[in-house]
Length: 593
Ligand code: ASP
Ligand code: MG
Image (tube, rainbow, N blue to C red; front, side, top):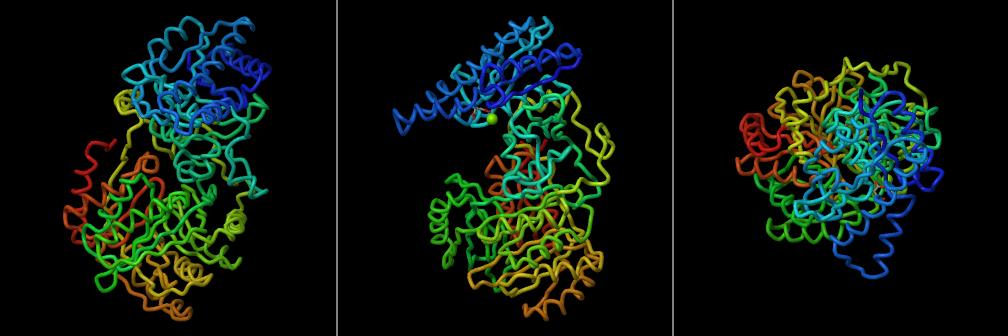
């Protein structure tokens, strides 16, 4: 008999009728022959009400007491749910996080799960109970109640599904599923039948609207398929399944996302030598600023330009930290721009297709949208644009990749042939020792690529489009793309292609660049790409720091960087590739999964 975990969000348990409807759903599932674990959130906006109450007493509530307070919301829901199920004639037992044995660290209000014991849960299930678990909470070593951060019930649900090796984890919420983009911005957004964990993670800003991103990280780590459905239409609407496979294998792009409130910081005159990136990112890690799109362009005359984005709200703290670093490193010029947004296209399919990025750039060019920066990962291309053009940019790419229409080659459910196999039960148990730790899936050295750089790219729309269309017309597969606009409004665009295509790509790009009044086009086959990728790169700051530290201690200069939610790529010179790989393997030794 399989276990099904069903999670009901706040809106799905907002009043007595909704609680009864959820109870009936769970009972039906049990009657179909499953063991059922329900995870419930606080009723309606109860958590907000509690936060507000605390705020009326103090502007700095002690974190421990905040957790004591907020955990009561879920305690109300589990008790009422158990009563409802009893009333409907079935057996149920409600349990708090502590009673289940959800052990967390002691970082109140944002605790991370360390382990979950399953004994008590299993005993109740075997006795025929529906177990109702309070979401969002756990207990630390000293029996203090902790909470997992706002929206954390999703994480409780997926974590329970993982430890119980449940057949399914169903998330009942007030939306119909996961959409190709935010339907509030793009009316044509379409509900996807399915989407892969990887895509959702790279679409972070969008996934966040639907699910707690840590819960998706769990889902991926433990191979848990997550079924998101609308509780208003229980059995009839299929919702979206988040699993190993995308909706379509042929389609290059599955979804597009907008991160609206970003800021861009650019450092010019940075010494192009080992240790610089380390100094900079250690500092930012130290003040807890999460850095997104990192772009370092090829240096000229011993100087490089390093740029990156942070959330706009982190800009003041970032500028403070960067000013300190600038003093340490000498004569560095800092510029920043607050009104920018990041638009990303994401799809597992793009990892194996040519001519994807250029379509995004063309869609922007046709709308007269200028691109300030570009970064890529295997399954994502992100472009930074001015905020007033961001919505238009999002609509343009959504329409370019025809995301409003269902794909023709939908992957059938249950077809896992092309997917990575989920970890075996033994692995799951082993990995549970480190429940929410950062897991680095792999560190790779790619010596197959060469780099082409177009210098002095004028700050006008359409240039990236022309360059990458020319490359795509030759059927050349582009891997990494990096563009960053510096203080003089000039950008460099660098990209990598297979070594054997470097000459061909350089030849097609040269006349295009000359026509567009760019500077010289150069190429370099003597490069190596080092990539660190894994789960939790986004929610654990410090991956970049560790990476740059390891390289700097080995005396390796970072020539180019490009990062995404799940991956950091750096380019180093070819003769340092092997040494770099060793240094990174040693640096991440404790977290390689
Ligand atoms: N009740 C908590 C919150 O509102 C946890 C959750 O709903 O997932 O954030
Ligand atoms: Mg919620």
